Amino acid sequence: MYRMSKIFLKALCAGLCGAEEWQDVEDVGKLKIDLKSPLPYKNGIPRDDTFPRFFRSL
Figure (spheres, rainbow, N blue to C red):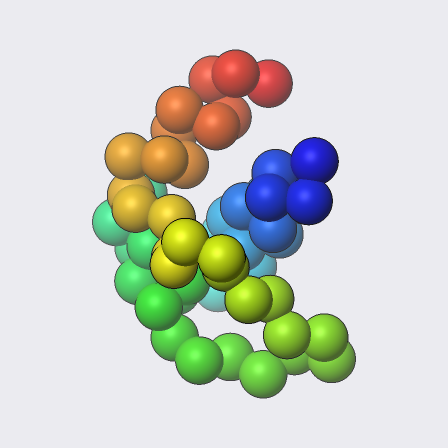
């Protein structure tokens, strides 16, 4: 559940910033954006193919 919430939050942030493709979402994930609480990804930033797979599963 924790990983799913981080993917959703990153996709939401990317969408609000104008991301138009999944590659854009991955690029936003690679930025070191300091939010109030850090979002450390145990296995690194999800790749661009992870985002559509995640949202299809919802």
